Image (tube, rainbow, N blue to C red; front, side):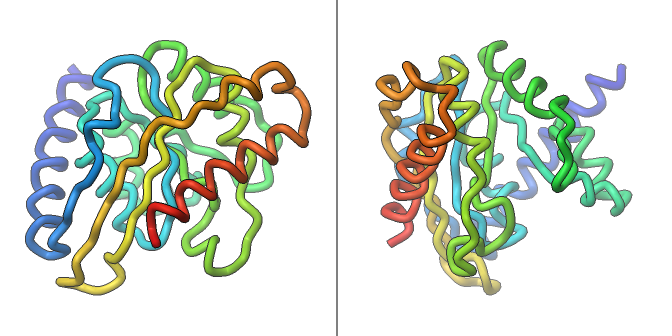
Length: 200
């Protein structure tokens, strides 16, 4: 019964958010043909505003996408409720708990999607913050298709927002040495480079 209730909540929320983004942010969606209709996918996007997660959720054309978000969000009762409704994977900052990583890999192995913001925080690119290599770990330890996503605009009301889904990245050659930290960094850099290209 609870699963059915949350499903209804997701459908209603996504419909409202989509209309809101189309009217208030004049959202333009590009490249959805690059998104596989089935099978595991990792969406890797830049993170500028609070709008990014819901915008990605309503435009990726997949109903099985799970987001990785910081646990602090649950301090807000409404966000905590939405986190449960959308089956968000919560992580604690600077915590060594492997639970979220295992849950993320489990999600991909089940053929579902994972949405990640490698910057780890809003405006990480602008602030010069080093991207998190967790995205590379998931990409190299699963059979998921990696889709870079670029989000432009959205900082102000009625400012046009463009979300671009890039072509899948071929990272197969890096899987031979997937345990090496240097490889994780290199793959992360490749992903971030593609994201930056999409927001220029």
